Amino acid sequence: MTSLRLPAVLRGSFLGVLPFLLAFLLGTSHALAADSWSLSDGEGHRLSAKVFEQPFSEYPSGLRIRLNAVDGKTALDHSQQLVFSDSIGQEWSLPNRSEEIVPKGDSSIPSGSAQFDLDALMPRPSEALPLHLVVPTVEGVLSFDLTPQQAKELHAMGSVRMRNDQS
Image (tube, rainbow, N blue to C red; front, top):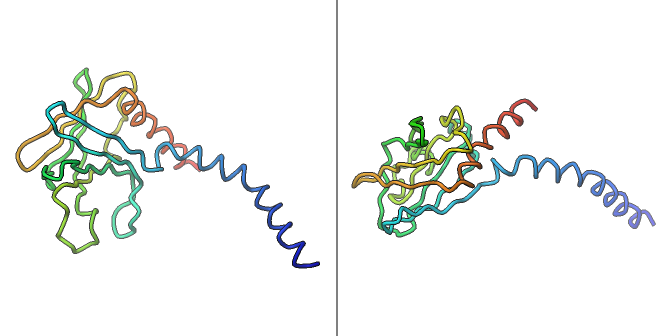
């Protein structure tokens, strides 16, 4: 009899906590659940972009954006900054954090990947203005226009992050 009651107690406890767990996950998932985007410049260059919270304790915490070349041929620059700009001339330079892609002390950063500090995108761009992205490569720069939805997501990350910092 005791073994039958224990699972029922556990199930009841889990069902009681489930709404709070779902509310937490839904409230923070927008900025921290690894939003992924596809970027295309119209000239055949394609990148995937992923936004996430830096998970490794040996590096500074914060939001990162990682870019990966889809074609396997594009080599991203691991020393230059990523630049966002809007249609009214405001510009944001994000520090390159490509060294965080690999364990500390490992110098073999994949050439088709680069990572940048998204916390430097302050104040967050307006969700109402078009955003342009300039990506450094070893052969120059690639330019991408973000979709309105991507601009909205970048704008919203600031408010979700501030709400989480206040908790």
